[in-house]
Image 1 (cartoon, helix red, strand yellow):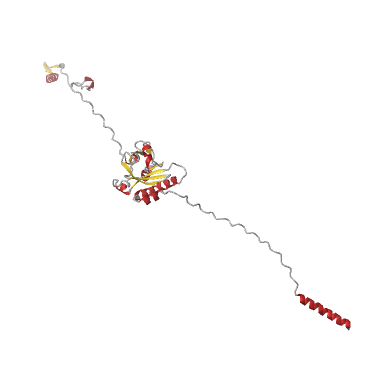
Image 2 (tube, one colour; image 1 turned 180 degrees about the horizontal axis):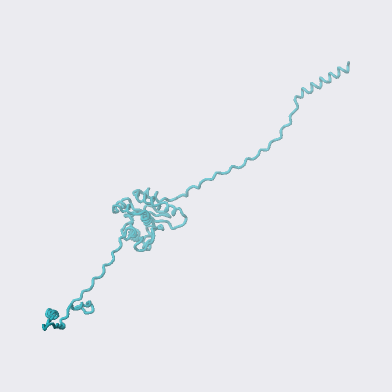
Length: 269
């Protein structure tokens, strides 16, 4: 009996001890190592336009009164060509002679409309030199200047420029004479001048010189030399007439004389 009581007390003691200690502690989870994310691919960025880019139509539009020339530059494609040349690292720059709207108005009626597309292109190119020439250097250039229109040979696209100490610049095409009235833009690669007239080249508007007239034959006074006279025609008739033979026909005792030849002799006398 006493043994049974001790067993019960032992069980109760163990139960009370376990209840006091609480639930068994749970072991902490092992730390998780984070996987590094892949680096993002950068988006390509378009290059920014170069600083100081020059645009020929922009220069002329800012100056004003060059609408006709701007229209020709664009329609012929020369504006794009000039901008490409200016933005290239090579080359000696460009000089542009820009006629005003009034200069185009002064042309004979229908002048531009009478030109073909290739002639319009050549006309615009004739206003562009392949070198940037400041005003002070015009008195040192060698004439004729070669423009971007082509050959500077006589009758083609020669351009002659004269200057008096860099103060006044005169331009001659062989068809028109113009002056530089103002400097619109000056830079390292581009110089733009305002000119008083449209520069018409010989190849487009030049009138060929008439051929010289043949020399008139020289008249000599007095008797004409025998060597210069054509052979005279032979005399139509000879004054020496020989009597034609007379034929006598005898028949029946009566002589019949034919006088036809004698009549011819008489007529000749």
